[in-house]
Length: 265
Image: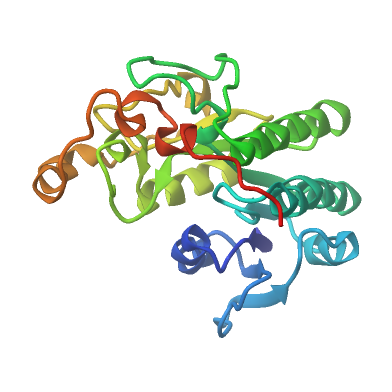
């Protein structure tokens, strides 16, 4: 690509992936509402509130790919979620439509299906079962992306990220973990595919205990290489396994299924 935009670049996942993007594009436009630090030689830094439609239009102009990690990534007040994850996403898709429809990788979430039990194996045909307002916002995002694909031909990879971090932090993540290397490989597959469409892709490594079937997306050529199982002994030594009735052991969304909805001020 000539220019790849990454939103949410100051967040945990954005910060981890930022340095890896140099091999995917000649220029990387790095954006967030938070401090982005110093620009690398291949980077363009652009501060942007996703809720500001005019700013988002300027942000997207000149880009031929978008890695959309921006927005609220945890359960929060609905007023915050609606600005970043709902209004902000609409702004992004309108900007993409106005600027040549660059392909988008949208960071959706496993919390779109959080109320499935951990003893259930599901694929992308399973109905959504969001476990909070954050999960609801990602359901909206997937629906919005699908509408823009059907109506305008806007291609998007809807990546339902499990737990993308250096290593799993609890026993539930032995099933949901996606390594940085595997996510990086997925980014490459999404942006080089001759035809993408609008697939839902489970963002998970090749874990022995994973719950999600990715066979429908095999045409992309993504083959995760890492397996969370190598961290099991380390986790067993560091913490007790959750009891069978605890959310971390019962539901795919873990604690999100039991967390209260945030009250507005």
